Amino acid sequence: MEAIINSTTIVLACGNITAETTDAIVNAANSRLAGGAGVDGAIHRAGGPSIMEECRRIGGCPTGQAVITTGGNLQAKYVIHTVGPVYRSGTGNEAKLLQSAYRESLKLALKNNLQSISFPAISTGIYGYPISEAAHLALKTCIEFSRENTGISLIRHILFDRRTYELFSGEFKSLLGSATPGKK
Image (cartoon, rainbow, N blue to C red; front, side, top):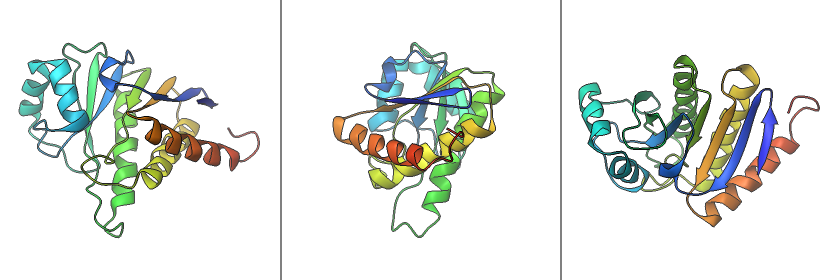
């Protein structure tokens, strides 16, 4: 599924983010940039030790922020590491922090003149963010960013399984359907 917003194509697809060929892929990292399970572990395994070496030099990343490293052995030239929030009850600024993780990743891509970026479903794994709510926030943030900025021609949301893809697709249709005519 895809839509064009301003000059940016936003795509939803099922797949493995480590196989993406966009300029950058986004890693759902922990604040210590120490590698881990899920997407984080998969990116470090596929990308090789050079990514971890750069992460160690950077030292860490606060929740809602983003940093950039080489892509190592990945097809993507860069990895943008962002830290999404751990979901507790939805009352601890989690929504604001999740939106910030997406926005800061996009801003970093733009600052580095990257044309394309691929996101996983940040915070929906071991961080426990409800997928439907995370989908709404992720897609809303990317749509708003695309309306306000040019320079990134492709934003891909690479979703690990069919259930997550379906939830993101439903939310994408809803957000696009509620768009102001002529503003898609």
